[in-house]
Length: 219
Image 1 (tube, rainbow, N blue to C red):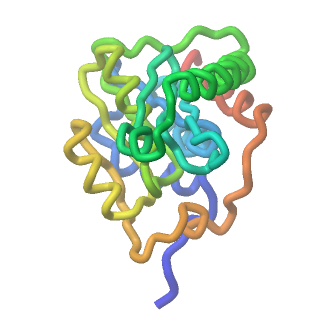
Image 2 (cartoon, rainbow, N blue to C red; image 1 turned 45 degrees about the vertical axis):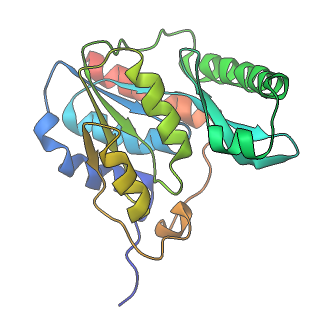
């Protein structure tokens, strides 16, 4: 039997929206998409549920010299999350962490500006937040997003992804109020493997999707 794949992120978002149907037409729900790949997925969910869509920005803090390895992450609202095991094992100094964090904070600010066009973030306090991405491999970025959202006082936090590694999916069960992940293939390999079209989005495409969603919510 050939492994299942989504044709693209929009198709994945429509499939995921069906799993979240109980949240349709509720005034206390907001979809927060991790850019860039989570945005087209989140758009389809927000559209189907008739709720607002916003981006939630997270930047990985890479180990100096081994940038692919995450020693933590920063997220919208100034939250910083560190992987203490990596920091201690590699003896990374507070100064090194601060230097990487400053650099990533600049990129975070640049993206906030690029994606939002000056529109303030959607209020999270007291609301049901559905955090969306196009998939979860290690889940480090999503973990940072969860920690950052929690600090803003939401009523509930839901992680919703079309596809994930089963181990990562299981880890999130204890971190959030609900995990929605319809598809956990093994062996997992990489998120992109489960999409026919996994092309990268540009900043302009993200901005266009967000403005389309805002326009649809207003009418």
